Length: 166
Image (cartoon, rainbow, N blue to C red; front, side):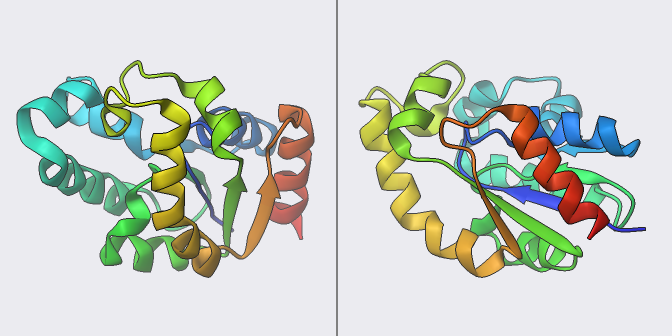
């Protein structure tokens, strides 16, 4: 049975679209950020405050490793692609889908709450900076790209379902 990983920036829809797609397909859904929170019993912003980015990335790597190799839809944290081991695991899936969205819309979706990488700066500026450093990684890993900019969740779910069944 196939597996599908969703990659992209925070706020691109990985969790919402991924969970709905998994429900439609009747397969489990895994979200590495939620897995890290479950492992530690701490929200992500507290993990960053207590253990820094390197501590969080270590936990994220454990979460990526824990996702089954087949039969599921999985959402990787936005920065999971910064780690080569994560990339190797994610690339082993039949489908890796980049959910792409412009920083301006992402900023409107995510705000600052619980987002340590955004700090106290303008969210759109911070997201633009992050996107510049990650988009090449997303592009090289993706087998498919879905633009979630001003798009209905149902449309993205339908497209992911087609990819899964393709």
